[in-house]
Image (cartoon, rainbow, N blue to C red; front, side):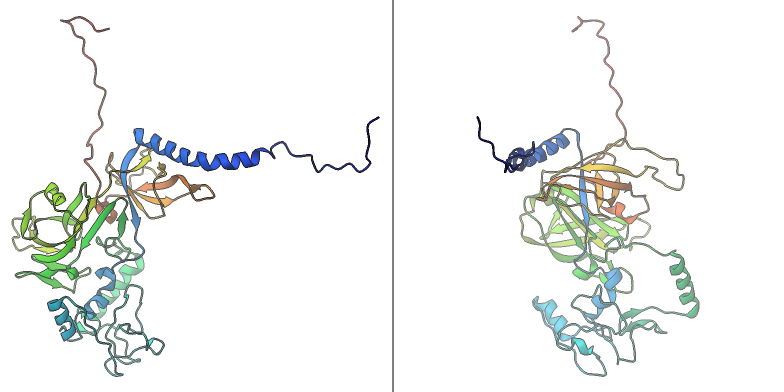
Length: 421
């Protein structure tokens, strides 16, 4: 007769999937890497090529928003450069003097021990960085409107009257004069966006040395340059081809002649051959697009974008639908696209360009799709098409864009020879 115990327990009763947990955990670590490559290979078959532009949240301040701080770091309230700035231009080294005194300069009490940072009492410090404004005493804010035009404590001040102030106030209240700068696209930083697998360089008038009759006009927002200029630019190494070489007058492309180390560059391929990862002397001579205005040599920024990788940003379109909203110039409805897993991150307000339709798409939402170890399996983003009037349409599109759809090529019957089938 078998032995029977009254103290029976269920400590050896296991669930059906208990033994499969450890096996599944080990298998998942190896499967995820294979699945990532599987998704990427699927995109490479029929995926669309394009560029992902990520919105900048730091960088050099654009003159459309930080013009006063930029001017005051170069010129004093009389519109003249001090000896430190002149020596810096001559020697290439940095010179600086910490302002002091109570009448000409009034430093905030909480920032006395912080050098090179003196800001206006009533001004914003968002786009100023380590720069300072020339201000009066603590009861005299230099941000107030002056009555006469000229160089004031906060830079150039245009002529103002009561009617102009009221009209500007009405425009601002109704949003009639809202317009993003073509240099920073409203981000406040030069360039506005950073492309993936590419190097984007934006040259503005405050970065250059003007030649001949060229000069800088700080009264415009952003700053406007006149005539030819020279600066130093680093040409990156391992460049495949150029996405863009363009001189802009606000949002209008202009003709120009470009010289690298005093050698004229005739084409994009010629500039690619000079890319060696070293700094070079760049000289640009603007040419007027209108032959009736030979002295039209104004410009706002010079754009260089280098493609440095053979790996593209792949994505897949669903069926695109064109709506019937006549208020839109581009009637493409908002839709969702799937991006490849070789993209590090995608955020709202990023820009995607494609090389098939030549359109720009702004990201509206990005659901996250990854494992608990942050291994990305792809991106499913909600996007809308940018309208032709939006300034982000100035961002370069890679490659040659087909201009029309290609229909089926019919096979003609070979009447004079034998049939192959």
